[in-house]
Length: 257
Image 1: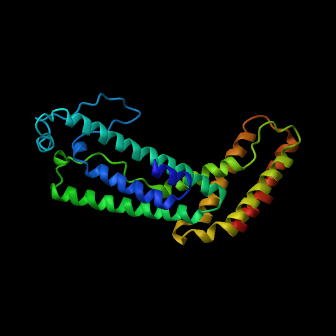
Image 2: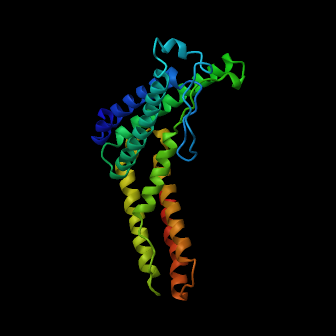
Image 3: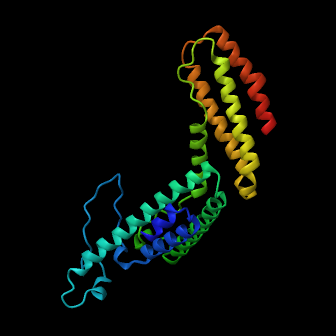
């Protein structure tokens, strides 16, 4: 609950730090070793570990402790689920911030922190594999959601934001193609100028942020052009479209390249 409050208050870096700590606790939780966490898309019946199948349970169960295994198992599963729900909430806030503009620096720091966590996880997996001599049958670690690839998810979020921002072409009357395309051009230019002024300087160079924005808007424009050309078009609208593509839009592409 405290971590969720941090997320809702958009204290994103601190929230992510605590989520990473909770995730690591799940990875080290002995009640989850050699077990498979059910996924939302594949319902399974969870069978609590038994004394005969899990050598660590005798260490946990004392006199009269037969029921401690299932309860610890359930608690461990709840913690795993909490981690995933917290990550979902964190990313929702991150991508909202990425659209709105303020606190972009926190989004960058969270992505970098998560990328470092992905690297540490990969190194740990490699070391574990080497220690087992490549024998996957001896791998008793809990399945992980790592790598989380937040930078790739950020790219996808920018693309979704671009698609949301640009005007939709629905209901263009005959002879009105030029007016719609001018609205489209104006919004692309306005948003790309804003990205150059307010966004680019916040991100490290390796993010290639301006190209990410440019490609996202280009895909959103292409999606709209495909829509407007999917049905019959008046000859005047065809000329307007061709003129816009070759003499206007391409010029802006070269200007921002």
